[in-house]
Image 1: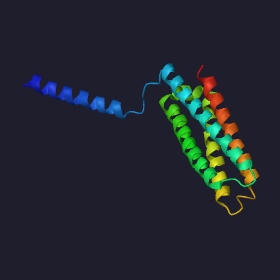
Image 2 (image 1 turned 90 degrees about the vertical axis):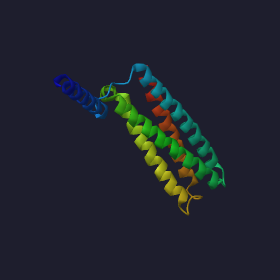
Image 3 (image 1 turned 90 degrees about the horizontal axis):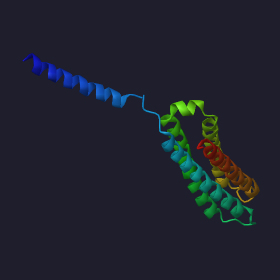
Image 4 (image 1 turned 120 degrees about the horizontal axis):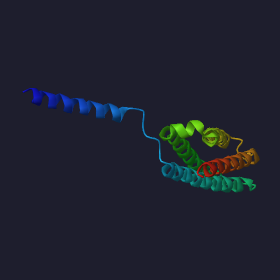
Length: 161
């Protein structure tokens, strides 16, 4: 009887320990290979964002831009920026020791936050009745998104080494 009760208690204790370990915020740090793969993905996504922002800038440089196309580009850029932000934050969550010691991580986090601000400001200006009048400013904001995306790519590429 004692041994059966002991086995039951041991199994329950082991099950509880497994449940606690699974729910614990203490997870293993990502391997260097996994972290570098994620950084490469972030760099690739940043490059795609940069190219799209430069395309939006070119579209806004013409005298009568097709604002419908520019809005579509901005929506796509906003989605990419949200994904980049999510990827950067997830990388920091999955590699806390690396994130705490990496200057590039802090810069990537700051750049993604800045990209979100740029995209929001651009969307507000694009929706205003003065969009045609402000097309040069809108083009400059698109160029700003492109340059920050390039910096984000650079930081991700540097830290992957």
